[in-house]
Image (cartoon, rainbow, N blue to C red; front, side):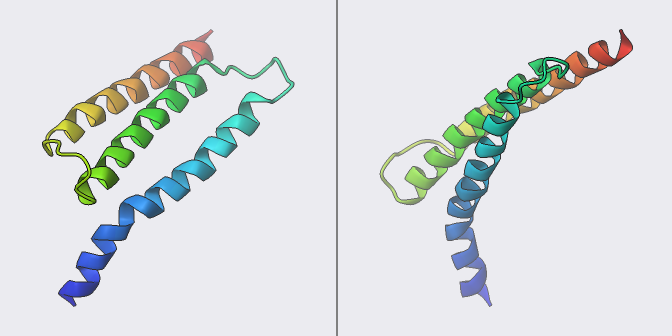
Amino acid sequence: MEEILYAAGLVAPYYNLVLVAIAIWLFVVLFKTPSKKVFLKPWIVLFFSLLIYVVEEILTVLRTAQIVKLPIHINGFFELVIISLFIYALLLQREAVGK
């Protein structure tokens, strides 16, 4: 049973990158929306947070493959920026809805 969990832990970052590629494609489709009635600023902020997540996952894959030697706590800094951008996007949306 431990081998299955270890194997799942090894391939999880690759699955995450595939799912993020699908999410990036969905963002591109959203940004190509011809309607000007859509308030896109919070979605742009979320897109940047998704790009930061991609960088974090790539570094995780490189660290797992032992190509790059980085301390594990560097992920916390990425996650702090991602959460801050999520909060900023929520505040932008709240301000837009309140108008």
